[in-house]
Image (cartoon, rainbow, N blue to C red; front, side, top):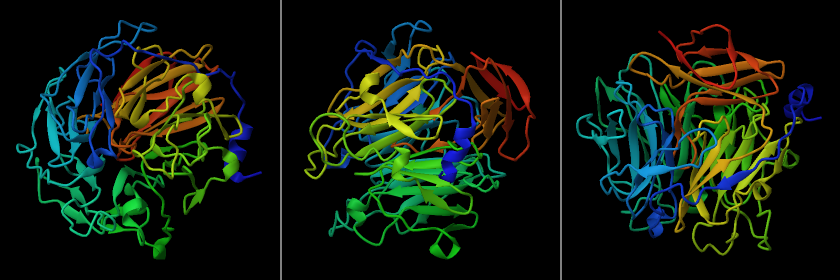
Amino acid sequence: MKPALALALLLPAAATAEPRFALQPDALPVEHVYSGGWEHYVGGGVAVLDCNGDARPDVLAAGGTEPARLFVNETKGPGAPLRFRDGGLAGMTGVTGAYPLDIDGDGALDLAVLRVGANRLLRGDGACGFSGATRDWGFDGGAAWSTAFAATWEPGNTRPTLAIGNYVDREDPDGPFGACDDNALHRPEGDSYGQPLTLSPGYCALSMLISDWQRSGTPELRISNDRHYYIRGGYEEMWRLDPLAPRTEADGWKKVSLWGMGIASADITGDGRPEVMLTSMGDQLLQFNEGDAWRNAPYEVGAAAQRPYSGDDGRPSTGWHAEFGDVDNDGRLDLFIAKGNVDQMPSNAMRDPNNLLMQAPDGTFSEAGGAAGIGDDARSRGAALADFDGDGRLDLVVNNRRAPLRIWRNETPDTGQWLAVEPRAPAPNTRAVGAWVELRTPQGLQSREVTVGGGHAGGQAGPVHFGLGPHEEAELRVIWPDGTSTGWQAAKTGQVLRVSRD
């Protein structure tokens, strides 16, 4: 038996529910499409955030050459049809993606907006209004083609450290192949930002994530890169933040090259350390975190999702956004992967349905996307799993290239118990980025980190969702970014529980 699967076999299994999702064709007031030419083959992310404090997640969708749009959630309640109104964004175009976070520590969520051109920081007013703050916060938006983002709070700073990944250097006359742009790290200077630090060489970043990968109290920046343009010599990267330096083979970083599109991270083995899923063209790469090394998951785990599971197109798949989430609340994290051809790439499948990989008690995954009703074969890009109607089941939103954005409501019957936990802390890091939420039941321990980054060009700020299977009570604790803990506390299921540090 493979060690990574042994722990899961020891845990009792909850009742299994077959996932079911219903498309919500009337959810949006206007059709939204992520469009554009070569510069928008990649990107197309969605950001999910509660921008007005009503406990209903809202959605910002990148538009490419079309305007990005904010959709404000007006769903009536649990089980009701999903409905959103147009919140507007004053016609901002060129947007590849966006990430929500509270940059200025005032409690309201702001937005870091990635663009083809100058990136922007938008200040949120707590009522779904956003205004430009790029200049006020001294942020250098640059003029690159930005496609990846991550953030964290380093000790002693009143603003977050922002990492931005850039794709091909459009000004390189010898490009596009072999013309990957450098990336940038923006460190705060007081309540403003200084000149960005260059992360070089760049290998055409399409996703990045800062995480405390080893649970050592030392977060590091992982970057996933697209070898389609770096051609040779590039690889997946890990950067230390203090002192700022890339990891090398000399200190154990094994070079892996792939057509990296997105990062998803979560502890799926129960040892407290996060695994990582890296989407790509062809095989999707799941890596087990073994503390001192990363081990590629064997094919038998069922996470490769290398070809379409329906239709007669046997060419390799193209994976973009990936996200772990317990869609049937059985206490085991499942995995959604958005799929879609870059545009007309003949080497890869043209009709490439999205994946929903359900995790079994033995730690393996099996495909349920088609049966669940989310096997859409549009050119999907960014996505998010979030509970839009407040019924404790994770719904789904997917942004598509040259096809309408789609939203599905999770209607899975006989799901398990659930609990959502929202850590809050005093300024500056009000959303407790870098904290770990741990929850235990007789089924085992679940550990989830609060992060900003990953996915493909979009992420979430909101409660951390746990499925609990048959268990109606659980114990939880929050380990804050500085390592202090709330201690274990009993909690009833079926609620969103805010845990405040003060």
